Amino acid sequence: MLKMTTCLTLLAIASTPTLAALPPQYQRQAEFTAVLDAVTEALGVSRLIEAIEMTEPDVFVVRSGECSVTVRIVDAPSKKEPGRVGPREFEAKSDGVVC
Image (cartoon, rainbow, N blue to C red):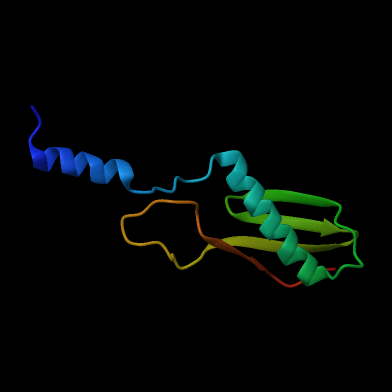
């Protein structure tokens, strides 16, 4: 028979809400969305995006005609409680437009 403290511990663990990290395909989708937002801000809405290339981990080069923008995925300060897991918190930072 389980002791009362063990039962309470198991109950507390089972009732604690947890956030899991995003599956890789959804994490990448979130990164692409952030990259597109950053590039649209850098290029403006009048330029058509023709290609997005991941050149190294967390670095994307976006091409529009003869111009390109490098966008980096940078970890954002975590808003999670210590010890909690969840989706990666990040920001997309664009370098200047190169034409």
